[in-house]
Amino acid sequence: MKSVFLSCVLPAAIVSATVAGSTGSAFAGDPDKQFFQSVEGKWIGPGEIIAGKYKGTKFTCTFTGSTPDGKVGMSLDGGCRVGVFTQQMSAKVEHKGKEGYKGSFMGGSSGAGLDIIGGNVVDAHKVVFTINRNQLRGVMQARIPDDNSMTVTVAVRVSDQLVPVIGMSLKRVDGVEVGAIARN
Image (cartoon, rainbow, N blue to C red):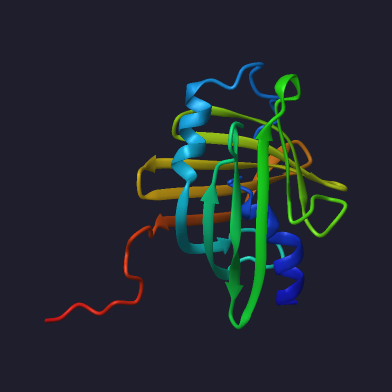
């Protein structure tokens, strides 16, 4: 069951990257570039399924964020672990002119992942994307309140309501010795 979680449910949590049904502005301005540049670097942190069949399942993710040369958008590469199971994860999103933001996670809905079908940067600290896979419709919101933290919330549409199902809290680990023990 954990592998089903990793390949079907968790992909929605990763697209930070990762959501409220707008097609974005016709011009990707400075707040857009500023947000995506703030995603660059290494991130690690816990997450939890907060609703549904796997409610209470905890996981840990590690990602490296980058921005494409000459384009507005981002790529995230890494993986998430639940117990002894690890799933590699990758996501890409770019501004496509009048089409707004488009992208995919884990190959999109034609593969094992999700499509990013729209979205917009709210300000230099928050982005919202519309996500889609077959009958699943939802949104993902990523917020970077400061230089060293990012929260990601994924919600799916149930009837006429958006129900939060996944939450993540990531910390930047660039240049930090992870696992080092301080001397007393």
